[in-house]
Image (cartoon, rainbow, N blue to C red):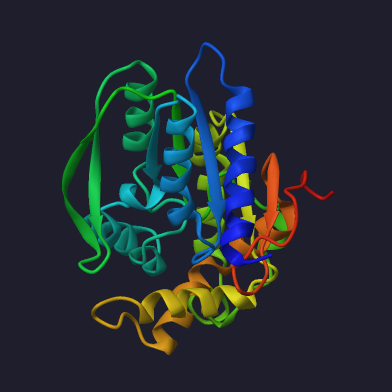
Length: 264
């Protein structure tokens, strides 16, 4: 099967699961996957497919709700230096995201921040129309559950070993997964997970993304360090499979089989 055909099949499976779930209420649907897995390009395709079926959908990207650079700098000063880097739980404005979801569910317009990754800061606002039957929340850690505390003891990479020797950073991140992020993810009516075959391919996927940027993006060493911030939770999600349907991807980012239930 060609990559295009494989993704066509995956899109159809997700859209059908959403259509089967839609009733009289608006749905909040989660789409997760490691960096470079294809979730951000899948989301607008789903909007088009759902529109063809008579359903109005809006996409919310977790990345849009990063804390500002100044807010993360304050966390780096008062909590842990690694919190200057965006992305891990605790570096998003979850209150703002929940407010946007509340507005859309109530049929009101929602103000959405625009995050400029090149500047690493918020760059303005946009308004989402209130007309939505489906709110699609996409992001790398959407649906992730907190790790058991004993798993936090041993570092998973050099970043944790050298820059979080006490475990304070990873414990703080895990506490946010167990609190405000858990409350957010509890609102998801359906969860879909694009599952990488292993963590090692994620570095390749992210490096490929960076090479496609007009500026050339981060260097290989910078990408590796950046991805190390995400490694722990990414590995945990690959093991835990926090979703209703899992799509297994091959190293070329192609769905390789029919979607399955977690651990099936």
